[in-house]
Structure formats: structure tokens, C-alpha cells
Picture (spheres, rainbow, N blue to C red):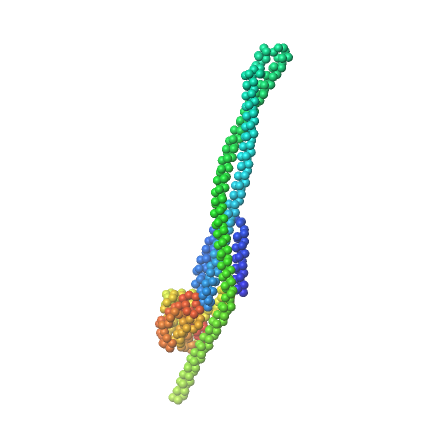
Length: 446
């Protein structure tokens, strides 16, 4: 089930990334900042939980732990990268829409400028024609081709009919001159207004071109940024998928490791059970010998020892000299973060940096100081009977030993130094307690 959830989470990330790279809907800057802040917070949470994660995965291959840790980091980074991608694409989309509007305005303004220029040209030609006509009339009048005044029309007329004709011609010429002058004045006025508007249009065109040039540069920068963000998201998603593939490929190896770990636990339990039986047999022999001696001496037979009871709290001291001791992972059942199976964490983990002296939690005898599979370098101390119950403690993943098998130790004596031997991902002390050969929560006796 865990593998399926890993694949589904990666598939979901791929879908989100694809959606983020295809949509260009604007995102509010505040929302984007919030998402980036949340993503940063999530990354911090991932970093702060890695120590705990290492303890949860202490029976897991270190390379697989690194892959899983990278996957968690990527999962935390992806929302921030997607938020930045969304922001970059929104900026690019806004600039492209702005560029389109500038282009439309530029087209309309240029068309207006062309229309004004054409109108000025047409009316300039009309004005030239009007000036030419007025000039011709003036030249004709100067040459005497036309009557200059009403008096000359009277004096020069041969008869009444000739007078009427001369007056009509003079009036028509005068009207033509007046109309031509009015047309010329109107044309000059219109062209003056048009030239003023044309100047404004040309200024607007220059400003739009400048704005368009700036937009092109800004859009190109935004396009590069957006592409960089797309590449970042694609890289994160690809790494996510690659990590998920590695995790799935290593499933069988890890399950074999789990089986081997359980076999080690079973073998240790059998060995401890043999120690407990030997202690019980020795106690029974001592009791029988005492009873036999009493019978021979004619004394009352001693009462049998009371039933064994759980040793009380405080019978053990903390095995780490760190003050105060820091528990990084307590005793209890765990769900494997990667593959989802349930397993017992049969001891208490203490923070102990590499090379930290590890001390005996009670006086006893070194049952063994040896390398024991996934436990790494292990010191097993036999504390004999406490409240009639067998009590042993083990100190695991040591870098080196300070005692030897069979040696007697006192409480607080250094038995070894913290390390990461066996199945371990970082230096720490894995401390186990056994009552009558069965693991118990060490904190109930500390």
C-alpha cells in the first residue's frame, strides 16, 4: 500500500506540474508570496524531522534513506517552485497582453496619422489650385482683360446691353475671387489643425514605439524567467519520479532486510531465554541445596522465594552521560515511513554524537561485547535478578568497546563509544532492556 501511495503522490505532482506549465492564469502577488512562505516552512519542517526520520529508518539501507529524504525535500520544494512558475507565467501573460494592446494602439494611431497626412496633401493641392486661380484673376485684371471697376464698366460701355454684360462679368469675377479666398482660408485653417493633430499623433507613435521596445525587453526577460521556472519544476518532478522508482525497485531488498532483522531478534530472544533459564536453574539449585542443608542440620526448610516481579522504576540509570539526556526515538511500534509495514522499535534511542562515551546503566557482568548483525557493535550486560526477574541491558551501534566479555562493571562505567555500526543511519545509542528475556520499555525502569 505504501508503494502505491508513493506512486500516486508522484503522479499527482506530475499532473500539477503539467497543469502549472500549461495555464497562464494570473496569480495575485500576495497569494504567491504566501505559497512560497508555506513551501519554505514545509522545507524547514522536512529538515527538522530528518533526525527523527533517520531513527525510524535505522533498519533501512542508508542509500534508500537518502533517496527517501531527497524525495521528501523535493515534495516540500515543489509547491514553491510551482508558485514561482505560476507567478512568472502570469507576469509573462500580462506583458504579452500589454504588448498586444500597444500593438493595436500603434496600428490605429499610425492609420490615423496616414489619414491626416493624406488629407493635408489633398487640401494642400486644393489650396495651390485656389492660389493659382486667384493669381490668374489678378494678372488678367492687371492686363486689362477684365474690368477693374463699375465706373470703367459704365465709361467703356457702348450701349446699355454692353453695360449689363460688363457688370455681370465683373460681379462674377469678384465672387470667384471672394470664394477662392474663403476656400483658401478654410483649407489653411483645416490643415493647420491637421498638422497640430499630426504632430500629436507622431509624438504618440514615438511614445508607443518606445513603450513597445521596453515591453519587448521586459517580456523577453519574463519569458526567460518563466522557462527557467518550467525547467526547475520539470527537474523537481523528474527527480521525484526517479526517487519513487528507486524506492519501488528496492522494496524486495528492504523486505529481505526486515526478515533478517526479525530473525536476528528471534535469535537474540532465544539466546536471552537460555540465559534466563540458566539463571532460573541456578536459583532452583541454590534453593534445593539450601533446603537439603537445612534438613541435614535439622533446621526449618527456608520458604521458597517470592514470585518474580517487574523491577521498579529507577533501578537503571541513563546510559548516556549527556546532560540532560535527549531521547530521539522512544520504545514502541512504528509504521515504516517508506513501505508502510509495522515493526517494533524494541528500545529507546538517545542522542549521542559520534564517539560519545556510553555508560553502564547498572552494575553487572558483560555477557558479551561483540558485533551482532544489524545491532552492530553490541555490549550486553547481565544485571542478574532484580525483584526475582532476570534483567539485562544492551548498548548498540557502538563505534568501539571499552569492556570485554566476562568483565564485571559498575554503574556509570564506560562500556563503549557511540557510533553507527550495523543497521544505522547516524551516530546514536540504541538502548534495549530485557526482563526475563523479553524487551520492555526502558523508560519504565530509568
